Length: 284
Image 1 (cartoon, rainbow, N blue to C red):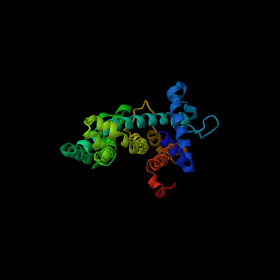
Image 2 (spheres, one colour; image 1 turned 60 degrees about the vertical axis):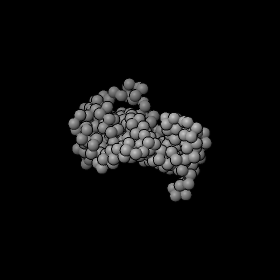
Image 3 (cartoon, one colour; image 1 turned 120 degrees about the vertical axis):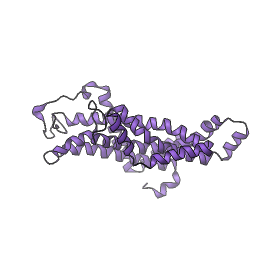
């Protein structure tokens, strides 16, 4: 682990884009945590007399059509994105890892059944099933996490299955099996550690995808409930003011762009860390 960490910082330290991405990601993590631990930032007062005010020293990012501070809305939207993305990725990992391991290790009919089920889910465009689930069950933070996890686990299952298929015939696994190691020991002691690297890369890219997906659902009115702020919901509300006050759409869009781009660049740096042979083909 120390060698991998050193290699990551060595690769990231040579790339200005990765350094900037790390700073941007750290900034948004801090911004997202503040409303969760300091109640005053989670309460967004309404000042109708100040509605649609432009950015100023008092309201750094302006005031929206409801008389609420865009700065506080952006901060609470970051909290929502952080919660949804982390819990969705965690749930997807909890489902995808066991199913992918079982399919890759045991093979046969079990592998065929799980693989065909994955193919069925992949046949749908990424947001179709979440939209259908949210339309049926209604909005809410938990429903968003569940809806995105139902399709999110597929990518992790495919990664784990591929790794298990590759490693289960390796010499060290065959040797462990010949010494009488149980299936569970071979799966989680000898093979699973080799899946952590690609899973870490996949999880980083998935965090960005989940943030975009959550914003898309909220933009359509199918995301988190009104008790939570979403960047997608802010973009939806800003549509009526695109010509008169375009900053209402600009700041949530900028927030989405910066955090998603930073996650993608960091994910690329992780990929190069775990696969040094690809450094020549990458941007570093």
